Amino acid sequence: MTEGSRTRRPVVVGADGGRTDGSAVRWSARHAQRTGRPLVVVHASEPEALAAQAVGAGATGITALLDAEKERTDELAVQVEALGAELGIDARLELRHGSPVRALLEHQDEAVLLVVGTGRKSALREWVLGTTSLGVSAHAHCPVVVVNPEVEVGGLINERIGVAVDGSVDSRAAAALAVAYAAAIGTSLVAVNTWYLEVVGGYVVTEPDSPEWQRIEAERTAMLQEVMAEATRRHPEVDVELVVRRGPTVSTVLDLASAWDVVVVGSRGLGSVQGRLLGSVSQRLMRLSPCPVLVATGARR
Figure 1: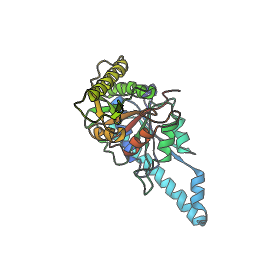
Figure 2: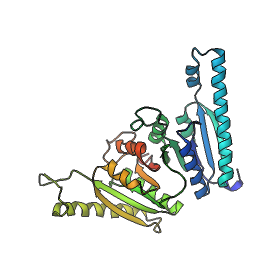
Figure 3: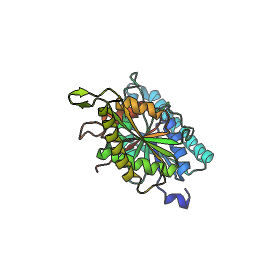
Figure 4: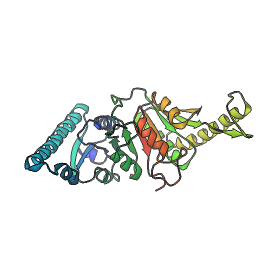
């Protein structure tokens, strides 16, 4: 690691050596390259898990498990070195014993970002979020990026990121983080607010040309303007587009996210239950997003 990179907060990504986190590692490396930061790849193996696999395996089986773990870490070391050489970044592999969540959280004070894959391992893969990604996102007090294994991470394809804003404390933190992120990587920003079942005078608003519809849109646009004016105070150079859409939050944001390189969300807010560690909308976006999800964690810490 060079002298200059020691003063730069690193991008820290978790890797288990499997196929579920390859996109997360590649995305992290490219982000480190774009922002001039070092990359730390953390691989944590739990002795308890290896022991559980070894039950009844005998001496030969235990040796095979240990050999497989050694082969996995050797391959990771080669991949990290190759990524560093390819992208011209300082990259290192850190091997730990213990919980992957704990190993990553131990970096949260120094990291500019913690990055995790979703680790989908279930037949219900569209509904099950990996325990590492959920644990890190729920408990970190620095921003966390979740990258699904299917996400294309070849670079900034759209030159645009998005942020979901509902006016809550958490979404305001997400807006500020999104602006800072857009300024750091040189992209434009789309701030989106959604509404769906609005009742005015005892009736659900469904007619686009009605005064009630127009009033709802005007009020939500005004809220977006106020939130984003505050968020862009330090980075007025960031180009921000305001979008108000009627529709369910998750499906609406997912539809828009197909044209974004990253979507930023708060850890709560967006209609989630007060006091939960991670909002239900945030979790669903993390599971299903076609682009990486940047979670503005720790907004109330």
